[in-house]
Length: 179
Image 1 (cartoon, rainbow, N blue to C red):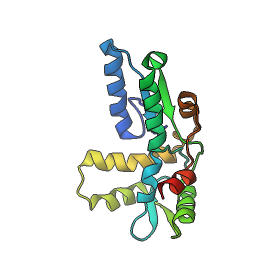
Image 2: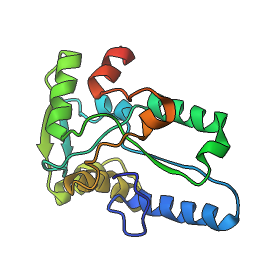
Image 3: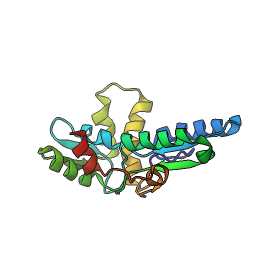
Image 4: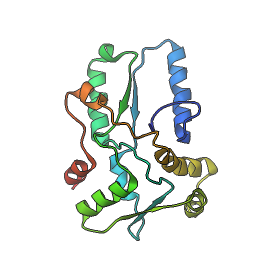
C-alpha cells in the first residue's frame, strides 16, 4: 500500500513514515497508527489543463480513500484510545482502481473527458521539473505513480468500516458529495 510504512517502501515518503512509527514505538508512549492510502480528494487535481492525468502508473491498481473517512476513523480512535492502542490501521476506500478507471470516473462526474497517459519515468521527472521543486519532492511525486504501477497499493482494506461501523466512500460517491 502507498501508506505501508517501511524502510524500503516504493513511495519515498513512506520511508519517513516508517522512521516516525519506529520512533513512536521506541518512545514508550501508547500509539495507534492510521496509514492513509492516496486521497480521493486529490483525484480531480491530477489532470492537467488538457484533461490528461500523466504518470508512470501503468495498469497498476490502488485504493484511494476519502479524507472524510480518514477523519471519521481518527475521531473514533480518539473517542476510545484504549480500544485502539497498539493498532495499525490501513485506511482505504472500497475499490481498487487503476488510473484509467480514475479518468473514467472523473469524466463521468465532471462532464469533461479525462484521459490517462502512462508516462515513462524519465517523462514523469521531466514533466514535473518545471515546477522547480527540490529533488526529494520530485521523487515523492513520481514514486506515488511507480508505487501504483507495482500493485503494492492494490489491496482493499476494511479498517475504515471496522473502526467507524460505516463503509468508506467510493470515488464516485466522494465526487457526488464534494459537488
